[in-house]
Image (cartoon, rainbow, N blue to C red; front, side, top):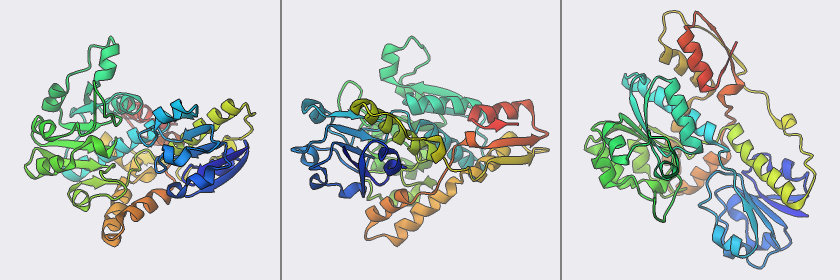
Length: 382
C-alpha cells in the first residue's frame, strides 16, 4: 500500500510508514500525478481536497490531521466512495491555552484584571467548551452562545448573540466556518455585530478568518467600539493583511492550535482511522515518539504576588505568546512582496510548544485558590 502524506503532518512519515510505503511531500505541492498509484492521502489544511486533485486516482482514504474541514470537498468524496476522516477536537486544548496566554498578556499590558470580567464565548463545541472551563478557572463570568447546541441541549444558559454582545467585556469566537442556513457563520462578525458590542470590548478571533469581516473590525476599532484585539486567523490566508496586523494588540500566524500535542493528536487520529479502514495492525509506539518537555518543572515563591501575575509568569515560561506576535510582525515587514510564503514558513517552522499538563508546579506560599486555578488550567501541582 502507498500513502502520500503532507510534510506538516507532525511525525506523519514515521507514523504512516508502519502502515505502508509513505511518501512525504510539501503540502501545497501535492498534485494529482503524485496520487496516481496511491491508496491513501493524509494532509493538513493547506492541501485542498478537490475533484481536480483526486479524480481518476485509486485513492480510497483521505485523512486530515485537523479539526477543521473547510478545505475538503466532503460531498464529492462521499459521492465517489472515498472514505475520509478529520480529527475533531485534536487541538481544542491548545487553542484554549492560547486564549489564556493572550488574555493574561493583554491584561498585564493594559492594566486590567481578568477576574470578574465578563467574557462571551461564541461557539461552545470542542474548543469553546474548554475555553469556558479555563475562563471559569480564571474567575471570569462566562456568557455562552451556540445556536446549534442550544437547539438540542436542555441547558438554559445559552444566550442569544445580541445579549452576549451587549454584556460582555471580551468576545471570543470559536465557531466553524459554515456557509449554509440555518446557522451560517461566514462573516458573522460584521458591521451589525460590532455595532451591538458593549463599547470598548476586547475582540478575539482564533476560529476561522472568514467568520469575521475585518473591514468592519478595523472600523469598530478606530471608532472605539473595540478597544483591543487578538487575531490568530486571517482573511485572506496565507496572504494576510498587514493593516490588520498593525492594529492588533496580539497577532499570530494561525498557530493557536499548534501545540505539539494539538498537532500530534491529529496525526494519531488519522493513523488510527487509516489502520481501521485498511484493517492493518497498529504498531506505531506513540509514547516513544514524544520529546521531553523543555520546561518539565517550575518552582516559584508566591509571597506577596497576586494570582494573575503568578499565572502569567508561569505560562510565559512555557509559552510566550509575544514571540508569536513578533514573528508575524517581522514577516509583515520582511516579506511584503510574498507574505503568503512567509506566513506558510512561520507555520511550517513553528517551534515546539508543549501544553500545560507537561509541567509540574512547585509553588511556595501559594493560596488554595491559586492551586485550584493552576490545576483547573491543566498544570500538575506537586
